[in-house]
Amino acid sequence: MINYTKQKMIKKEKTIGTFSELGTANAVEALGYSGLDYIIIDTEHGPFAEESSMELIRAAKLSKLTPFVRIKEISRAAVLKMLDIGAEGLIVPCVESVEQVKNLVKYGKYAPLGERGFFFGRAAGYGFEDFTSPLEDYFNKCNKETMIIPQCETLGCLENIEEIASIDGVDAIFVGPYDLSISLGIPGQFNADKFKKALIRIVAACKKANKPVMIYANDMKSASINFDLGFDSVAVSSDIAVLTNGFINMTNSLKSE
Image 1 (tube, rainbow, N blue to C red):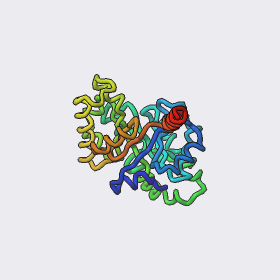
Image 2: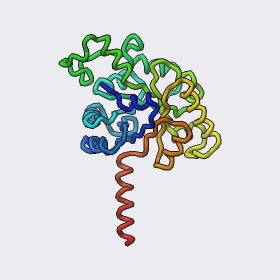
Image 3: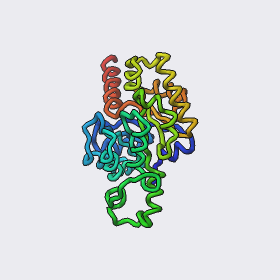
Image 4: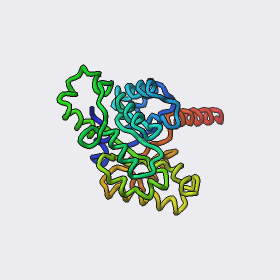
């Protein structure tokens, strides 16, 4: 198991991903040839469950595309099942407190860092691969390569971001700009001073804790701005939006000739 995106983050390289909304293994496999570093399979807002997510994860790994999953809730089952089917990172929405994040580490990291339950599932080679022996070495490798990524999108998370970012077992922070702006009472006002100050605080907390900081962006211009602000990684749009915009630009261009 090698988390190629995390390896780049350790080297302080910029990484770029997108949300996977098309929901087909072929599309995910093809994205692996695009230069993207990762996809995010969205089980919070998207229609994907464990069975379909597993096929997308399998397709991503064919071309060394890191499969992240945004889980639907903060629970042991939501964390455990996605890790067991091979997710290399979990983006966790609706984080409000330090205690919730400590529970995420407990659910998602093996002993001695956490209390993740062990099972000979897909991630463990179904029990037929030697990489789970000895278990202590396998646990250490999983803890190192599997990322727990709380999403900062609530006032509770923002107010505790310094402590949350410093927790051992938290591997990065992901900013959800839309919900964060809504929580701040300024929906979609990304140029507001209040919103900009929140981003500066989050980036500073992550830099102090030596943790990568990630964010969603609608387009390339917004992604570039976020990199300039100090973000280490940007998830740009979604595969279905980029596909549709590509065809819109093509048809508009051809029809105007």
